[in-house]
Length: 109
Image 1 (cartoon, helix red, strand yellow):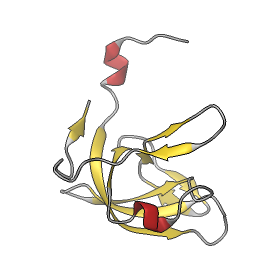
Image 2 (spheres, one colour):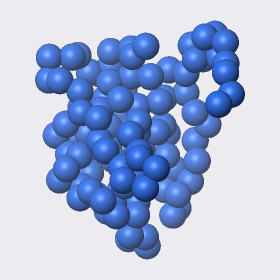
Image 3 (cartoon, rainbow, N blue to C red):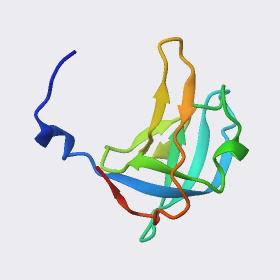
């Protein structure tokens, strides 16, 4: 395992976001398009968990997102961040919900 200085970690802007809308993308089986509220802004974030979760599993819930990544297009949709999940060695993905009392937009560290 490669080790990093803690200052590398602080470069990432991790925030709590509320998924206002979640929908499958048309051309793929794995992608879900999220509309996420971060309190002071909304962003579209594309995540590749549709093979294990439905949009209903994400919509109306809070999760942790990385916000300061370069935008990337997936199936023609520009993603403006990344959903943080846990994954086991066998490829099982686990959503990591945030408790309701944590404010939208809160910084995670």
